[in-house]
Image (cartoon, rainbow, N blue to C red; front, side):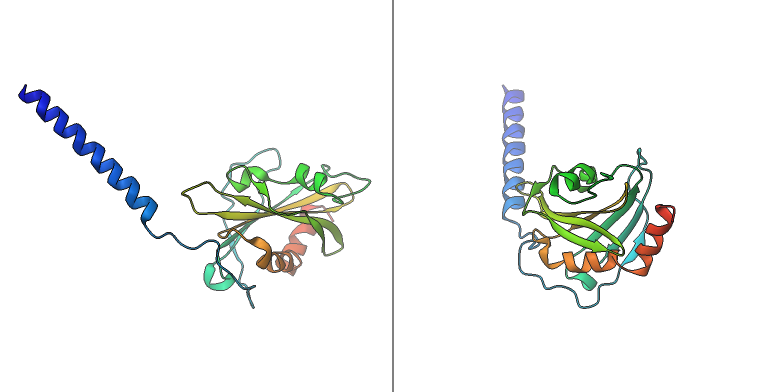
Length: 192
């Protein structure tokens, strides 16, 4: 009988501890990932190590803009997909952008936030489209899928943003894609 009482007390203690932990997690203040953010005046992009395993497209380039420089943390991953773009129309619609996008780099299955729109990077045309990611009781973040092409070759960029509204950050991402750093890399990656 004594062992049964000890076992029941231990079980109740564990149950109350787990319930208390769950309630504390839900009630604990989490960072605000949905408040207003302003486009950064002078974003600072720092090259980082490519954090993903190699796949059929190989490794790309990774860059980070810290919250102090961009208002929120932004991680940008970019790589070339040689011969994978529609040679006739390029990245001219959301279907082609979806086909080219590196959704596997975005984490959870992303959800479309709004239709894509045309962008220009150097001499290349393409599209950008915002996506949402995250789950209940987790920090919400978002991503931009960006792709642009030179004939049949595409450059695909994925910006993972520590915020649920990527619209304010998109101009800074596209501006960085138009920088000498990225244009020079794209020329080499596309064999120009």
